[in-house]
Structures are given as C-alpha cells and as structure tokens.
Length: 71
Image (cartoon, rainbow, N blue to C red; front, side, top):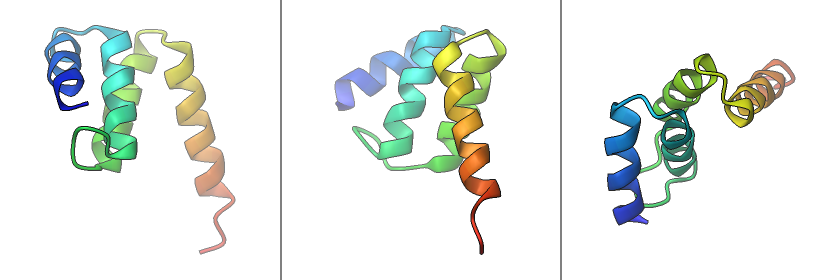
C-alpha cells in the first residue's frame, strides 16, 4: 500500500480527483500511510469540489455521523 500511496500522492498533487479520493481513503484507514483523519477530509473535500461523487457521499456521511454523535 505504501507504493500505491506514493503514486496517488503524485497524481493528487496534480489535481486528479480520483487520486485525491483514493489517497483520502488511505489516510482515513491508515493503509500505507499513518492514519490522519484531517488529511483524509482535506483530500475528500478537494475531490468533491471537482465533482467526485463518492467523495461527496463520504463527506455527507462524515457530517451525519458527527451531527449524531452525543458527545
């Protein structure tokens, strides 16, 4: 997964929305990179701004789970 993260990062830095979303997933779950929820959200937002449907859905789910968190 570390190799995949390296290539996703290169493409994400060039504005590729699919790579931004995929790299976000890796950060979200700590696969091939240290887990970093803030970085994952940043990447999801970048992908969503470019119309990536799954990124938009992931952000919406994150918002719903945050809003329903009783703490």
